[in-house]
Image (cartoon, rainbow, N blue to C red; front, top):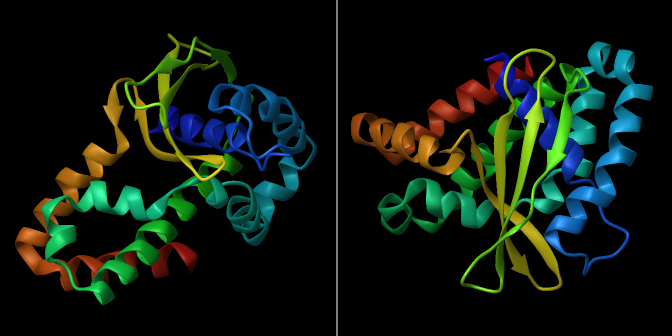
Length: 201
């Protein structure tokens, strides 16, 4: 859906690498967004025409700020504990690639949607925080987007995104649980491999 593409692309804008590792999650969002928005504007045509550049940007700007192991554990739930170490490692790799492909496509479609920053929500755990924003499309009501982050060392990493109160982790958990029930863990991994190979082609 188009608004999802806008949201994913906006997410890329919000999590560029930081000059200050100990910057708070809300400050992270505010300080980096303007700089990356300008970079997207300047490279718009090249981003649309050169997929390899899109993947490179995602790899450099986005992935350092994801905790893929935590995301994978949450997405798989009980199936994570039942998986072998080899299956866990392979799932993380393919799930990571799936998100890279999704975000890369969305970045190419980014259309300068407005971003409104709302007060950050503090969690009971001081090492977790929720950064709240609203994406303002060119037409229609604003889309609430929440980024859940966890402190890892001196930096904050994203482990879930909620779009209009729908969690990315919860959505994938439901889908993957159904897939595992039908085809097993190895079947899910092979399905992700085929999908990622198709997207790459």
